Image (cartoon, rainbow, N blue to C red; front, top):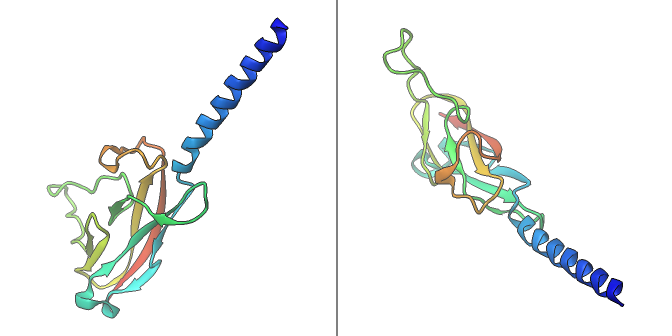
Length: 141
C-alpha cells in the first residue's frame, strides 16, 4: 500500500512538471522572417518601406515578433569616425519600428534579430542572448 502511494505521488509530480515545462515552450522562437523579403523603395510612398519581423513559435503560426533592426551585421561595431579610413556614408536607415529610408543608391541588406525567448525584452538583448535572425533586401533608386 505504501509503495503504491509513493508511486502515485511521484507520477503526479512528474506529470505536473511535464505540464509546467510544456507551458513555456510556446514562447520559444523557432524561426524569424522579414516581410517583405525584398522591397524597392521607389514603389513605396515617400520611399519609406515598412518591414515587419514575423516569428514562428511552437504552434507554427507566424506572428509579429519584437525585434531589433540593423543596417549592418548584428552585434558588430562600425569603425569610429576618427578612424584612418572614414566610414562609408549611410546608405539607408531603419527605425525601431522597421521603417527603412534610403540615402544612397543600390541594393542593401537589413537584419532583424529577436530573442529566442519572447518573454525577454529586446532592450535587454546582448550578443550573448539566445536569438534568431533574418535578413531582407532593400533596393534604393
